[in-house]
Image (cartoon, rainbow, N blue to C red; front, side, top):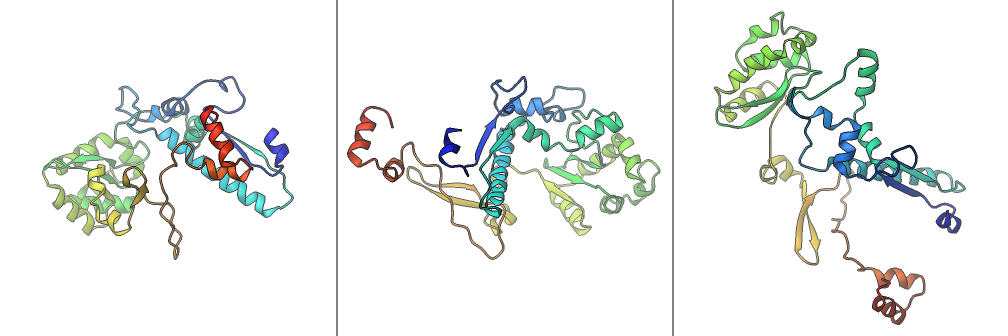
Length: 289
């Protein structure tokens, strides 16, 4: 209220774990808390086993992305109406993660489904799983339509599977996912990754090698698009980072830089409000800034 009294068009975003009201509003939290509470963690892990957190704070990243969208949306709204007053955005990190799980509420209410861990297999389409090749490479394969599935059966040299009543429709494939995965896994384990890739690519089958960051830095597609950029850093010289997303066709964005050091812009910021160099030095000696 104090800030908006000084600037009535100020946009304030409050990003917290659980929002500004409700019984959990004061609870502390980190990414894993948001992931577990939202239902995301319950979807990960092996069937019948423990739910799993991924080895990355995806809850924080999702909340940050929603914060960026909130600010951008607010700016568009303000620019469309020069007389519009500012406002406050109440963004809960847990709700941001939950918002990504669009299908869960309607699945539960209409179909009585409580989706849970299923390993690498998708329970809503089949085939969709990870398969290990003879030379130890993990490949992700997706066949989310009858046409794609038919091409998969051609690639593995077993076109008769496509008309097998157990696999002829998506519903049948989901119901008989164990048998289908067993057949596919058996084929994958008797062929090397390069040969599998050639067969699948020839038939436009969606698949991908499971890549580590060590693979990504040399991936031809990432390299061709410059998906890793170099950030100038005053201490380390240069740091690799993902590129700006999305891209605007025909425009080239300036390479960003890492966050500033603590107090790096003190002279610039305080100078704008009339704090001269001597006063700033005094504040620094006192530990104020």
